[in-house]
Each structure stands twice: as C-alpha cells, then as structure tokens.
Length: 69
Ligand SMILES: [Zn+2]
Image (cartoon, protein in one colour):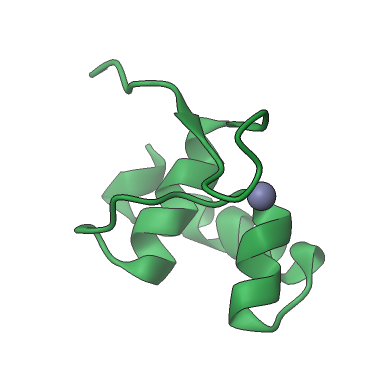
C-alpha cells in the first residue's frame, strides 16, 4: 500500500486526519484539492452532520470506491 503523508485539517491544524477522512475529502471535494478538512469542518462546509459523513464513509467502503481501500 502506498504511504500517505500525514494530513491535518486546514481549519484545525492540531487535528490529524485518518485515511478514511482524507479519502472522503477527495471523494466529496475533488481529487485536486490541496486543503483537507476534518469531519467536523467538512460537515459544516457541506451542511450535513458528522454522522452523515460517517455513514458515507461506511457506504463507500462497502462499495467499490478505490479511494477507500
Ligand atoms: Zn477541522
């Protein structure tokens, strides 16, 4: 598996992002993005709840999305 650099939330620099969160950033915000966000900040930006995002991660994992492997 390719090693990913450690990423931090653009708004909360002390917050390390796990690989599922990074994958969700790429999935929802686009693969060209340079700024990554934690689930809380993403939820706020997208006007959904953190739980919605967790559900999305689960469904992408069950699906065939290569970002979540
Ligand atoms: Zn954040």
